[in-house]
Image (cartoon, rainbow, N blue to C red; front, side, top):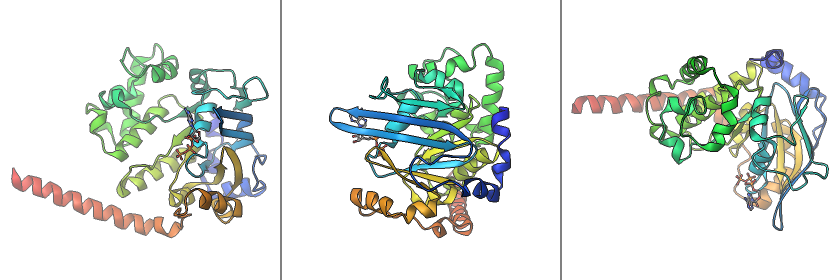
Length: 326
Ligand SMILES: Nc1ncnc2c1ncn2[C@@H]1O[C@H](COP(=O)(O)OP(=O)(O)OP(=O)(O)O)[C@@H](O)[C@H]1O
C-alpha cells in the first residue's frame, strides 16, 4: 500500500474521523480538509436528459463516503464518467477532475486505474464462465476475459505474473474465497460475488476503491462480513466511495454522505444530517414514496450476530441432512 494511503490510517479511530469532518460545511460542493478527488463542471446528457450535472464535488481522503440518491439520479453515470468509462458532454467546456493531485479528465479508464482510483465490476457472462482465480488474474496472463477489464488491469502488472498470483491468493484468503479458487465464478453466491469483485479491484493496490451497490443481492450473514471488509479497508488507510440504496447500510458505515438527485449534488453531510435534510426527503419522496431512510438499530451488532447464528444453524442442519442422506 502506498505512503499516501497508510499515512491516513489514524482515521481508523472514529473520533478522529468525526473531528476531521466536523469543520466541513454540510452543503453541496463543500471543501474538504484533504480531498483525494476533486470534480468540477462535469455534465453528461443523453439526448434530452441531463443525467449528470455536478458543479463541484470533493471526496475526503481516508474515509468512507456514500453516494446516495433515488433511481435515475445519475450515480452510476457519475462513476462511469470519473473512472474514464464514459465521457462528459461538457468535455472541452470546463469539465475537470483530479485524483490525488493528478488531472484525469483527458485520460483513459486504464490510466485512471493506474492513478489509483479503481471501481468494482459486476460479474458478467464471460467472467462467470471463468474460475475465481482467473477472475483475479484477469489481464495478468493471456486470459480471454472482458476486453475492457483487460485494458484496465493489464498494464498494472505486466511482467509480474508470479507476484500477481501470490497477491491473488492472499486476497482470496482475506476474503474467504481461497478454497473456491478453482470454482467457476458463476457458482458463487451473491455475497461471494461481491467479495470477489472487491478482491479483484484490490489487485491493483488502489488508493480509492469505488463500490457500486456492494450489498445488492447479499444475504444477511455475508452483509456483516462485507461491511467489515469495507471498514477494514478504510481503517488501513484506503478511501472508499460507494453507491448504495440500502439506507441502513449507509448509516452504519458512512463517514460522509453525498446525495444526488436529477444529476445534481443536492446535499452533503453526515448520515444523520442528510437524512433529516428537507431537500433529501423531498428528492426521495418525489422519486419513490416507499423509501425507508434507515434506522441504524436494525443493523445493531447484536441483531447481526443473531442473523449470523441463525444462518450458521441452518447451514449445519443442511449439512447434517446431506450427510444423513449419503
Ligand atoms: N446509456 C444511456 N443512454 C441513455 N440514457 C441513459 C444512459 N445511461 C443512463 N441514462 C439515463 O441517465 C439517468 C441517470 O441514470 P443512472 O443509471 O446514472 O442513475 P442511478 O442514480 O445510477 O440510478 P439507479 O440507482 O437506478 O442505478 C437516467 O435517467 C438514465 O435513464
